[in-house]
Length: 230
Ligand SMILES: NC(=O)c1ccc[n+]([C@@H]2O[C@H](COP(=O)([O-])OP(=O)(O)OC[C@H]3O[C@@H](n4cnc5c(N)ncnc54)[C@H](OP(=O)(O)O)[C@@H]3O)[C@@H](O)[C@H]2O)c1
Image (cartoon, rainbow, N blue to C red; front, side, top):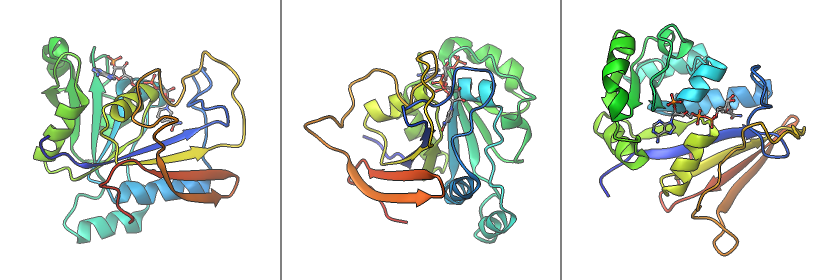
């Protein structure tokens, strides 16, 4: 396999494993202290990736919020906030979304081959559109990100994206935060979809840390030999 970045998956779920509650409103699965922890993790990465459905549903900024962290990155010769990356098959993304408008940093759109021309017309002013194959293949995309200088990639969801990184064996580390409530609605998105995962009853993922953060809990798993304590 060619070089790829160190890949850290980050996710918050309800006690019953849901990423959202199936409504059009963003579900808060974190608290202030945990959001600050996520900000610190972001500040240590070269790029942050989410799926196109998350860009549409949550309209996230995906920037480093803390001024001192941004200044520290700049002092180290980095852009104030990591590059942003998304993946799409149909490229129905709004160039006015916060993903594209905020951060003043590089935005990369890995698009399925058939939609690349339309994506470049729609998003060419605000992002670099890359042909990612049909469909976009996570290993190939990861290797391409490496050639663009991304050494540490943070994947922030949603479930379809997490599933592909996990089943492809690309994830080096997982941060799973459990919020103290249930969703109880199977129309909502789960952390992962069905799939063949490298970790199962006969091969356990390695739990390396458990941390209480106010009313949520952070579970940290090492998923590869490349796992690094920071
Ligand atoms: N709790 C959390 O930590 C957290 C974090 C992030 C998101 N979320 C929630 O998760 C939900 C979204 O999750 P999701 O699983 O529905 O979607 P997602 O993983 O965010 O994005 C899925 C979309 O990405 C594109 N895509 C994914 N794999 C692709 C491939 N191999 N080739 C081409 N395109 C590909 C497709 O975009 P197109 O449809 O454009 O073709 C697909 O519809 C939202 O409700 C959001 O609020 C929660």
